[in-house]
Length: 200
Image (cartoon, helix red, strand yellow):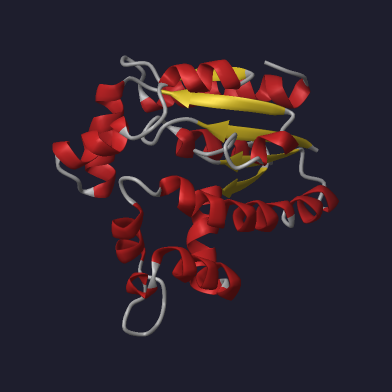
């Protein structure tokens, strides 16, 4: 079973890339969704987060409020958050690998913005950067998350530059300005078929 890491900035087209991989029979996991599940379910992680960021991150029911946690973390304490949460996310994703292999899946794809920072990349046979022009990403984030341009721009500018992903990843999948969704999907399928057979 080939392990493929999918990374790149938000709004670039990673969701489409994962959809293509699923159509080719791959098991896929979104590290953000794993993190959100752990915020709700993992008592140990909750204790560590409260120790790091204080009880103000809890709602009236004593659960972690994602909104309150975000206020405590941004803009200066993201590394502290990651130091607490990445080990739990990595452990949970690691537990998903053996069942996927036992099921005969041809590939296991991990979608993670922090693929390298979290250490998830060490399991990957190939790493794919999904990139798109800033203007395209801005429009997508505004539409997807109902943000105004200022909030979307702050989110875009808080992320690593394209050069970081180009340097670190073994393959690059570009979502070009003139691409239709169908064209991008076609090129994604072409790339992932190559990866499943060998390398890009």
